[in-house]
Length: 501
Image (tube, rainbow, N blue to C red):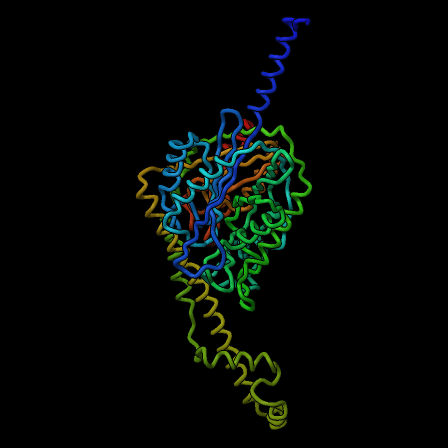
C-alpha cells in the first residue's frame, strides 16, 4: 500500500483548517421574545421585549427591542435600565456593553414591573438558540399609515398636531412637512432557507390606540404580528423605531371613528412582507459595530423663549373682546346663520315685508348677531392658541430646570453604527424628526442605510436646526434639551461612522 506523500498530508490539513475557518467565520444568530405586559390593567394585546443576538467570530452583539415609550425618562422604564442590562449581559454572556443596542418602539403601552429581568431573559434565550444564518437587506414602501404633524402657517411660524391642544384654523395653514414611507429591512434565514428573523425600521409614532382603550403595543405590535404570521415557522419580527419625532399616525385627530391601530399595523406589516419576498439572503454577512459618545450643546436661549411665550400670552389675553353670546346661544345661532345665509332670523316673506315698508330691523339684527358671532369665534381661536402656548411653555420650563440641574453645557449621547451584511444602521437616543433621517439616508455611502431614534437612552425631541428656531412654538422645538447646533455635530459624526463601517 502506497503511503500518502507529505504534500498530500499538508494539503489535507490545509483544507481542514480552511473548512474550520469558514465554519468559525459563519455569522450566527439567535432570537427570542418575552412578554413584558403589565396585566394589572386591561390588556388589548401583548407587549414584548425581543432579542436578536449576532455572533461573527469574536464579535457578539445584542439588539433588544422593547414595546415601551422610551429607554428611561418617560414611562415605567427607569434611567438605569440600559446600564443594568448591559452589566448583566457582560457578566453572564460576555457581551461588551458597547455592543448592546436597545430600542424603544415608543408605543405608550405599560410594561410590567420586572421588565429589566425579562429583557435580560430574552437575550439569554436568544443565545441558547444560535444557528448559522444567511442575511439580506432591502427596503419596503408604505405611505398610508403616517402623516407629518408639523404645520407651516402663513405667518411663517410652525405649529403641530397633538391631542394636547387644538389645531390651528385651516385658513392659517400653508403647508405640511414630509413623511418617510421607507421600511428598512434586514432578513435573517437559517441555512436551509427557513426564515429566522426580520428587523424592520420605520418612522411613525405608534400612539393610535385601540377601541378597547386597553394596554397595547399599538401599530408596530400589530405590524410585527402580521409579519410573523406571514413568515411562519416561529420567525421573529423586531421593530426599530425610526425618525418619528414629527410623524403621527394618519388622521390622528379623527373624531368620527374609534381610534384603532390594527388596520394601520396590518398595512405596515403586509408591506414589509411584500418587500421581504424580494430579498435574497447570502452567507457573506459580516458583523461590525461602532459605539461612540458625542457631546451635544444644551439649550442656552430658554429664558428668551419662555419670555417670548409669556409676552404672546399677554398680547392674546388683551385681544379678547366682549360679546353678549355664550356657548349655549352661539351654537344654535351659528347653525341658523349658516343654514339660511340670506334670511337667517325668519322666513323670506318677513324680510320682504320690511323691505316694502322701508324698515331694516331684521337687517340690523343680523348685522349685530354676525358681529357677535365673529367676535366669539375669534375669542375661541385665541383660546385655542393660548392652550398651545401654555402646553409648550410647561415643556420649556421643565427642560430649563433639567439643563440647570445638569451642571454642564453639553449632553453626552451614544451614536451607534451597525452593519450586518449590506444592512447599515445608525442610532440616536432622541426623537429625531423625519428630515434628519431623510438627509442621512440620502447622503449615506451604502444603499441600505437606515436610521433609528429612541435608542440607548432618551433625551426628548431632536428637531432640525430650522425647526428648533421656529418663531412659533411646537412640541418638537419646546420639548427639547438641545441647542440648534446639535444637528450639524450629529450629522458629521454619522458620516464618520458610516465611512468606518
